[in-house]
Length: 194
Image (cartoon, rainbow, N blue to C red):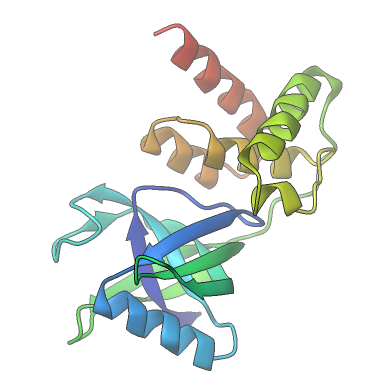
């Protein structure tokens, strides 16, 4: 168990995923500074259930992903830009708000998904992901690709496709990589045929 900053967002990050962020709130600028000083302890991205990223009353999922900052830049618009990489799924056991407004929580790592070879039935999803990563350009086009890994393919597609946040969260919480692929494909079909 460790105590880390929590970053509630309207997105879901998976292990090995990338998340570019524009940081403008003082509490999150301070969080980035702390993370950089801390030598990579990072922060945990949690999906918002109710409220907003900037509200003081926000409710979020209790399963998220610990992320580390792998790059940063001072943007032309004056905001701080960071690129975070997902490291491991964690469960938030408890949390509180510090005086500066930053949420911090006690988190425990969840068991890592087993590496499972992508079944032939899902090869079209791997092809879709490959094309999508190329179209998105940097930084996604530079990701080390693990197109043969079922969990990696499902994670990247879930992050990148315009699926409901609730579905993305359910897929993050799913432990079986093959079940995740099956549920992802069903969600993609449902989104095409509402």
